[in-house]
Image 1 (cartoon, rainbow, N blue to C red):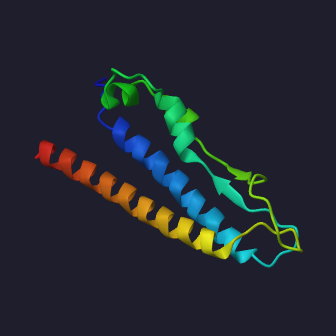
Image 2: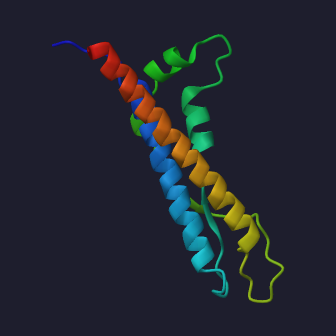
Length: 129
């Protein structure tokens, strides 16, 4: 059996896209609950999970870090943002403007991740030909 790490980078991009998609869904849910009393905004933090898993080894290449990454530990979940205090009378801490800016940023990130995966598959396809 021939084993290869050729898809490791694509797998990490796939996990990042999943995290980005989950964050988009979470931000959209926050916007839907902007008028719900006592609702606390939720968020997703994939960057810290990826940073922790890849480590901060200064003199190691990204390819080497990705080859040694346990993809099963790159799962993210939502968390309730208690640090964002509410000054509203209904104790809701969702700010429409902030959520819209974060949502637009996340949509750009998701587009960049999917474009990167497409480019990686195109490179692999050109090598195979």
